Length: 95
Image (cartoon, rainbow, N blue to C red; front, top):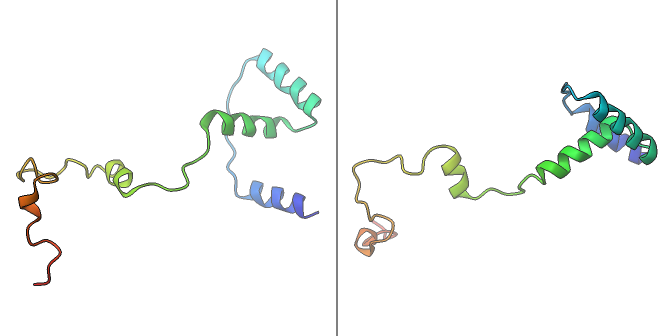
């Protein structure tokens, strides 16, 4: 019984989408659902998971900054700020 409650709770938080597919694809989906003894929706969800892959479990700070448009957004600074040691002198020291 716990397996069903997990599946039902998962579906309660899911979103419904609508898409149009060809008649031949509908027939193939229905046939495969019957063979696998699973719902058509379950097969579509599985196919999407397989196609899209697993969601990343963690995102680096760099990736977050890149997605936010922060990488390369500063103007007027030295072009070698990240690699020239002279720019690091005194960093990390108490003032």
